[in-house]
Length: 153
Image (cartoon, rainbow, N blue to C red; front, side, top):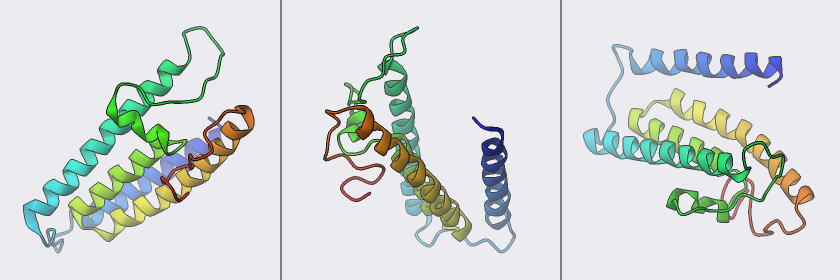
């Protein structure tokens, strides 16, 4: 990772962590409108997407045999969370954005939604680049796959 990306990423995560935590820990913070139903729904979305992200990283790790430089087209495994590979090139980014949208639902804080939106923009840029590279590298790359949002982007 280039050193400038380290500063950009740390600034993004630490800056937004401070911004979100200021509002969610402020004495005037009001809990979500729909109470525990909203909190638990957001938490369930967050946890499912985090597990999905983890599953994608395991599938990507297992694509290349140890000590090999061979590259393969990512495909779903027996884990149902990897099924998103049928629709997008970078499902890890899709799951990460989903997790932060779940967090936004759970906290009902505008700074959390802003965090998810800025994160989506950056991950969409990365996903479009990876998608373009996959299509150049693999002649048989699935044409119906999108970069980050199924059927859309």
